[in-house]
Image (cartoon, rainbow, N blue to C red; front, top):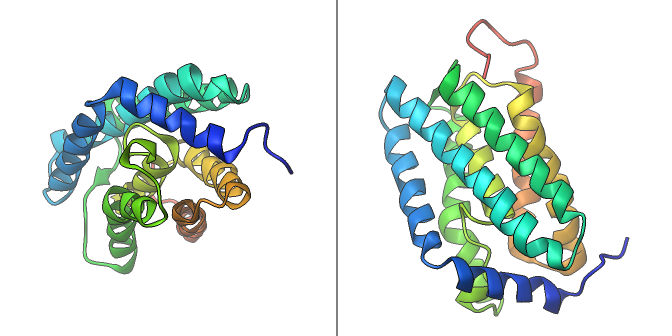
Length: 216
C-alpha cells in the first residue's frame, strides 16, 4: 500500500518540527532519564511520576507532532493524534489518578527485555539514524515523536508489575502502523518498533489471566 507522501516529505516534516520545538528534545531526554532513575527505586510517588511523564510524551506527540506538523502531509495524522492523546489520558487515569501497579526494573527476563527497549529508544535509535545518513535535525527523538516514544513506553511496561489492555492497546496498534510505514519508507531504525510490538503482545498474552495486582 502506497503512502500519501514521499520519503523526502516525511523527513522534511522532522526537519521543520525539530527546529521549531528545540530545545524540547533536551527536556524530553531529561525526563526519560528521570524515569529510568525512578524505575531503579521502589516508590509509589515514583510510579505516579513515571506514568505522568509517559502521559506527557504521548500528549505532546499527539498534539504537537501529529496534529500540527505531520497533518501537513498526511490527513490521517489527525486520527493518529487523537489516538496519542487518548493514550496520554489513559496513562494519566490508570497511572496517576488511579494507580494500580508499579514501574520498576526487576530481576527477570522481561525486565531485561524492557530495559533493552528503553536503551534502544533512547540511545541506539538515534545512533542508527545518524548511521543511515540522517542529520540530527531529521531524526525522530524520544518523547516528542511517535516511534521511539512507543518503543520506550513498551519497554517501561515490560518492566511493570500490573497492566491493562486499555493502556497497551494503542502502543501495540502504533507498532503495527508505524512498523508498516517503516518498511514502506525503508527506515531501518523503526524496525525496532515492530520487534517492540511483538514482544509487548507476547508478554500481554502470557499474562492473559491477570491477578488482583494486574490492573494497570
